[in-house]
Amino acid sequence: MILVAKPQLDEAEIEAVSDVLRSGMIAQGQRVADFEQAFAEYNGVEHAVAVNSGTAALHAALLAHGIGKGDEVITSPFSFVATANSVLFTGATPVFADIDAGTFNIDPDLMAEKINPRTKAIMPVHLYGHPAEMDAIRDIAEDRHLLLIEDACQSHGATYGGKKVGSFGTGAFSFYPTKNMTTSEGGMLTTNSKNIAEKARMIRAHGSSQRYLHEMLGYNLRMTDICAAIGLVQLQKLDRYTAKRQQNAKRLTRELQDVQNIVCPTVKKGCSHVFHQYTIRTAKRDDLAAYLNSKGIGTGIHYPIPIHRQPYYQELGYTDSMPISEKASREVLSLPVHPQLTDADIEMITGTVREWSGNR
Image 1 (cartoon, rainbow, N blue to C red):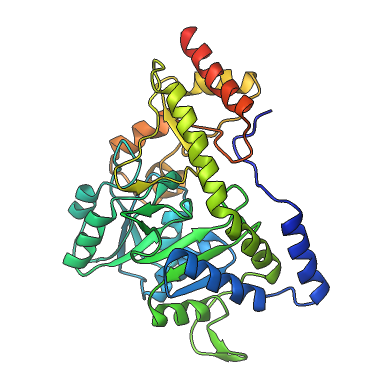
Image 2 (image 1 turned 90 degrees about the horizontal axis):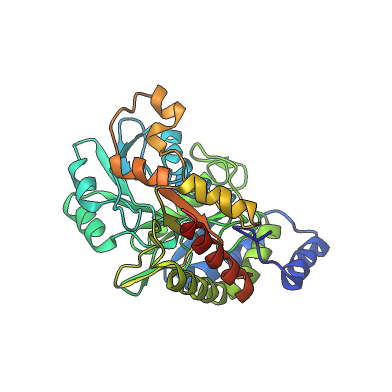
């Protein structure tokens, strides 16, 4: 079976974890501090704050900026539900703006239309590893005096105009096992603001800046040294992993771009797509997925239901139509693109898709 996603771990990660276990310091400690510094340097920001998930990074970012009840945050309906849930966690209201059909990222013009006096922040998602339109989005944030928070949970190392995502505003990354780099579970907040970093560190540790002194309401969102040890090793490999993903994506597109009923991913000029997912579109998505799975090729659907159509959000009263997101949810299909694919794997994937198309 060719898996759609496969964490890449070897003896270096095992040895790093073993060193932590032997040290006896397995909670948040020096490894976490080292990982934060390394990730900040990699991402070109002043500060990075490690937490226990990408969701926690989003939540902490919003709270650190003072977002709460009565505020609105504009974001994409075409993402994992944690994007919008993190807004609800603060007591604020997520407001959705539809996406660009090519990149699956939020449309800046539609985002601008949603701004009202209650809007406090905009939160683009760099979906599948392709950066959102950050020039336009940053201009909107500056012109309307809005906070900019980036959901970069799928886009480690992606760049827009040569600048890494997560460095335009306050960024949030995930290190879940299927991501381009992993810590098993974990997340990271990135910022150039010392004040936001300090608040985020308090939020992740029960509102405390020093032991047993609690100055604000906080949570237990800490990363362990075990996770950070894995992250330090994975970060050293990230650029190599990314290059392999991009190479695999280029081969997939070369073989599939002329296949009937298939639309391959686009990469906009000035953007570096890191291909967390290689996501095609086809009106016959379910048929193609079933065919590929019958041939031993794994696929994924990211995402079959837009957030605003999820049952809980329907209960909250979300009724707006998001036609581009809704159409995408019926057509998207992610094919394997991870670094462990062999040449033979890619030939099998593309050959099987072409075979399916020829049988239609």
